[in-house]
Amino acid sequence: MNVNDNSEQAGAGSQRPQEQDEQRDGRPAGQRSDLESEKLPDPPEAEAADRGAIDEILEGEVEPPPEDPRVGEVAALQEEVAKLKDHLLRTMAEQENAQKRHAKDREDAVKYAASKFAKDMLDVADNLRRAIDSAAQGPKREELPEPMRNLLEGVEATERSLLQAFERNGIQRIEAMGEKFNPNLHEAMFEVEDPNQPAGIVVQVMAPGYTIADRLLRPAQVGVSRGGQAQPRVDTKA
Image (cartoon, rainbow, N blue to C red):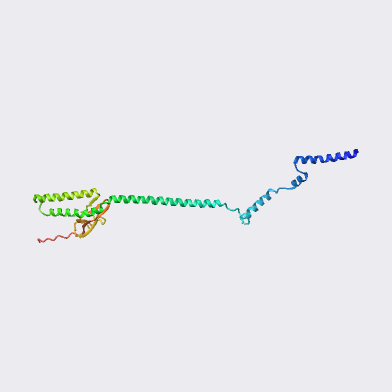
């Protein structure tokens, strides 16, 4: 009896450390030994594995992850916004140009509203000037009878009033006599041989020209010098 009891106590004593280990680790002793037997790869081996995976992706053996469809949607929206912005800027520029054109048209309409009427009145001004010039070719003013003098003074007053009305409406007479011929303002009707004048000088005015604002209403009808050498004088007394 004593021998058996001692052997049982010895067996119980030999198992107690193992049971204590199981209680401390919370897992069976056999499982602990299996996990402890597994070894992690060495750092060089892990780096080689990562490098191999990267090489496979670069070589196309492993397909990259699919692209997020939202990226394409964002790009499409950005392109549409850029087109709309460009369209808006173009529309605003066209509207501004249209406003400027309308303002210019209104300004021109005010400036040149009397153009047609003024052209019709130029003949009246020409006839008044012809009447005054004709009277100047006759007897002197002092020698004229009083009714004729009064009539001439009335014609001159009418011409002055008409020219003043022209000026109030922006119509100006072109002073062409003695000026250099300007094709933008003058209309050459003939040339005159005048050795005392250089070529291209207005020496005679057939009809005065007029401008309205900055626009030509009618060019002045003029005679232009041709120029040339003075003729030698011949002594007829010899």
